Image (cartoon, rainbow, N blue to C red; front, side, top):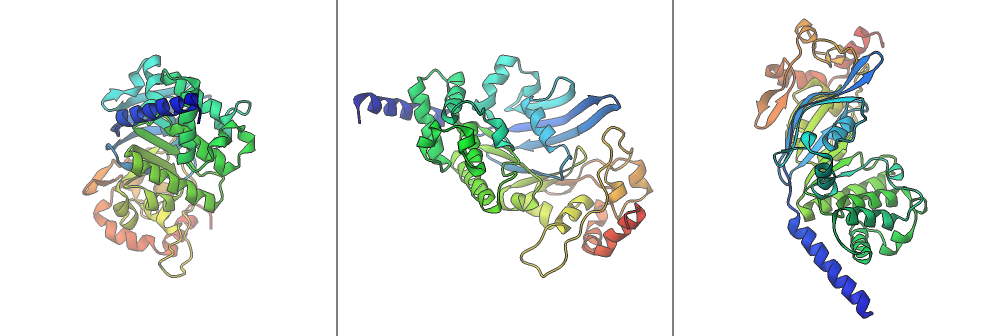
Length: 365
């Protein structure tokens, strides 16, 4: 080892130690967030009055079918929305409102205080630059360090996510899908952020690679003690990974609480339907039960419960009056008018005939 190389390693160790010392899990509080997109037909209410909290060091899962507003919610938190988007509400990072930050404050907060693991790794990496140079650029944009020190830090992160450091000299097209996703994780974590949001991090990957990526994220979360949000449509990923769960439907959170409670004793009919549609490896050979129908229009949504048309338990009250989140247990809430009858609803929701009635009602059977 040359003297120059040894010196670079020492300085990089100091940089890494400095990053470790500055890192602490942050608290994220989202209050009444709305994100509407302007169209010729009116505003699309992609995220409509969403509130939740991520306590320091906690791991929140946000689950829902495609198009329910999960990715828009994430982009709203990071202020990565197009100019025609209308945004209202509060997004507070350790008490500071992200939506009110000036451009330079926002640039500093990204990567160092909060970072994003995107769902499309190929589109997130510039194809004409080496992967290592892209990570170095992110480091040097926030820290006054030499190129060599930043490169060594990138090498440390590649090692952490299970990639050989010499692959830093490769271009994105030279990586497999799983390798690109690991590189994106390294890029998101290189400055030791206190909040990490992973938006569908295993999209388009095979199941073995998915498991490896999720296990890697889980170990990094445990080692860094960072606050985390995992956004996915896969309820099994939430069950395996997250402390708390928020269930989204048509731009709203319809159920929120500890993951065990939400998945084992769901209190909203939509969550009950999601549970029916997921195979249970511990229980029998029952056929999966799909939720009939499609989500409502977010340009002209119904005045009552947004799930009413697809809900087997909906009444005129549901169609006329929009339910609000109400407590159904310790830290557990659901947006349903009939949470006082939830035990009976759960039993009825387990039967295929219950959902077949919905298909008949809306003309799908």
